[in-house]
Length: 284
Image (cartoon, rainbow, N blue to C red; front, side, top):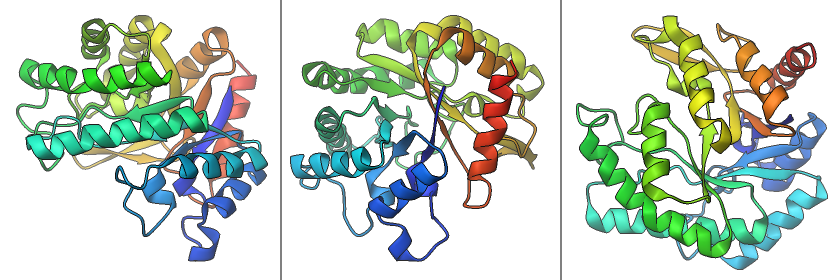
């Protein structure tokens, strides 16, 4: 596997001069990572990454920065709400996806990644989030995004999350079947599929996801969790209750050289988390 990190987690607690794209990529390579999850708005401060900002020069400059450190962009993140109820805002969001797809093509990003949203302006789980109506709305909103990706030869990857519209493997399959495009893939974040109601069956959840979505999984997110009240708190891999044996075994046996990015790390535990996962993987 090729381990990476969210670039905005690198040097996050350091002064501003250490939080440039150049400084962060240099540090990511020093820490032994080969790829990153890149979110422009969280790495380049002071810029609104609207259609105007997402230009060809940005893509080429970013590519030079990453090439200098021999780093790949595993995920170009565009984590917006693709089912925003305001039609004007929704059109803006779709256009933002188009811009990221254009930049991804020039940059050579593996996927443009997105979550699947919630049917409200607040982007919070409500009583309608898991409804069939919300799923149909998401599919209709995603279709033109994937169509754009096909034209640019780019892959769009959706990330199932319990609190969002696509919350399990079956919902993801419905989207895949409805869209019918080879340019639509999956970001597999095992922890994001969990909530207090299914935590005792997490092995079944992971097995079901792998069985049904294996062919479509393009990138894996690796983090850990601990219970916190009526929710789960995400933390760095190796610091909580997550058992990654099944996930890493799947990656090793069936996904050669797959890119997997760490999440929720801080400066003090990113390298430790990487080494922890590598040791598990190598000992399988």
